[in-house]
Amino acid sequence: MTGKRLPNSDSKNVLLLMLLTSKIEKAIVRSAELHRHQQRKAGGAPYVVHPFAVAFLLAHYSEDEDVICAGLLHDILEDVPSYGADRMRAEFGERVYAIVREVTEDHEAEDHIQFFPYGNTRKKQWKTRKEGYLQRLENDSTEGLMIAAADKIHNLRSLVDGYIEEGEKIWKTFPAGKEETWWFYQSVLAVLARRLTHPLVDELRVVLREAEEKMFKV
Image (cartoon, rainbow, N blue to C red; front, side, top):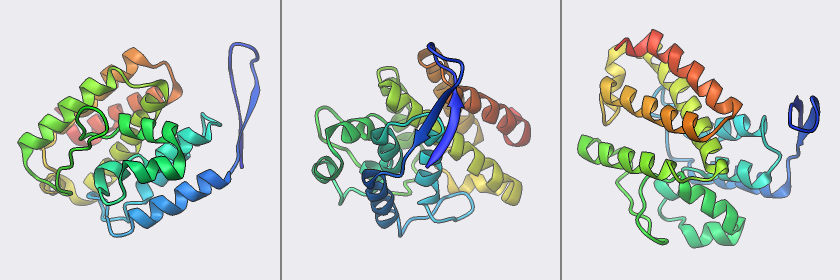
């Protein structure tokens, strides 16, 4: 259980408690199970570090277990096609699925998910996916926007850490180069800043500024 005080319109100090519910525990287990064979591009850490970090960030600002579960599962539809939408609905409910679907990069109309091969290095597909992601971000729910912000915060921090260790050669592991990556993160921040007033957006702004100083220098 975590506790912290956050301001709202009714009180200057509101105690926020995030319980480790059985549903969140189930999402932790499922995320660890489904990502167990994957690694992060930057540094090679077990991939599950990422959804755990995203959920950790979200838990600082939300006591909504569906948001935390969606944070833990946010890459599943994209990276583990064998799991599928129906199973996510059955295990975690329609709302969790709907939030995850919002932040899934590759999907078409209705419930059909269009998957690209994991680790795809073709730049054209990368740019197409990112442009589609940015378009959908314009219409995402507050919950989806929060997850998008937390996702990009941790991705950027991991990228900067990897860059400090590996230098310019780190870009060989990414579909796009430095300039395209810089464009994407700036574009995400622009949408989030316009659509969401939230500490996670403020944190993303700070992290992007730090990344510019240490890594991009464009």
